[in-house]
Length: 164
Image (cartoon, rainbow, N blue to C red):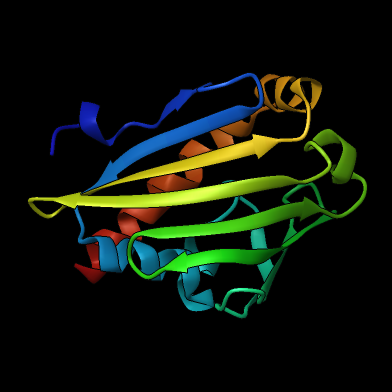
């Protein structure tokens, strides 16, 4: 896969959505495992310089997840949600909420859909985030979300390379 194919592409499919797409040189099973296994999530999810100190995953429909990061600025940020749909190695749908003070800044709750499509050993990942309002989506688009997601997905690519 060339470098261009490995970059993060951020689009706005509707007035309420942000979609992030990136391809990885790894089978979809490995990518799905990296999204659902706490041991792997701790290694890649979050901004550069932040440390995930809590990673709880109850991977079942109706099950919950919770993440807490110690930010490099010194504070902590928490996020949690509930799994709504799970199709192993293909699709994961979950709610997402942030703890205060990030709750309002990050859109007061979203519905996130991860899809994984593998072709010839390359998995294309798309994360679609559905916001409750145009204003919430606009606030996130103004934030450094794209930079942080790009950093996370670069670390995910490194993890997948190790595991392949």
